[in-house]
Length: 196
Image 1 (spheres, one colour):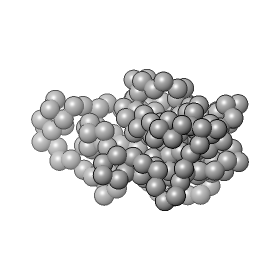
Image 2: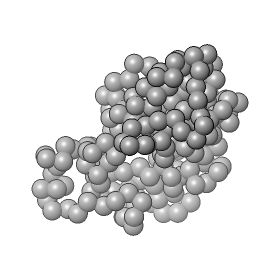
Image 3: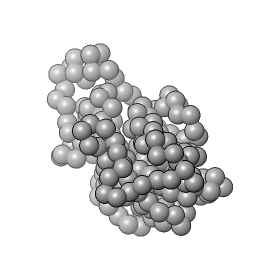
Image 4: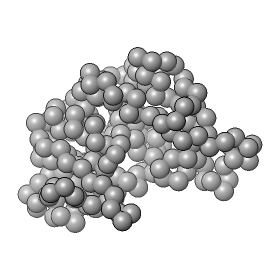
């Protein structure tokens, strides 16, 4: 899928949002990509998962590991396309951990799958979960890399879309300075485009 096709898909699903947002990284932004609005459609989730799987198939991952919540659906679809299992890490006492009986072994080649990478923080934390269990992390993939190449991972990062939307430290955010209210992603916002 080409860049414009992917952006068009996000627009058709009302998933490319404009406003004033606080990202999970703590940074502020005038743009937000709500991947869940795209991934709610199984045909889109499957197509995106297959595209990501094709980019890393030659690395022979044996397990997909995603951070909950954003990476769950796309992680499952990438694993389906690769023919491997999909597990996830979730927060417990503020840290990502394997729960629900999930485990990893030293023999496993782990692919970390995210929906969006902004700073790379949750990707690095998910990689650490795998490494703490003794597994080898072979790469990371995401639908969108909005880091502008600054995610600073020690494995390759493959994304379907590189989209450097502006981000701001909250203390220097021009949107805050203008008095623009912070919108919660997932609540009603102004969207670029309309329903698929």
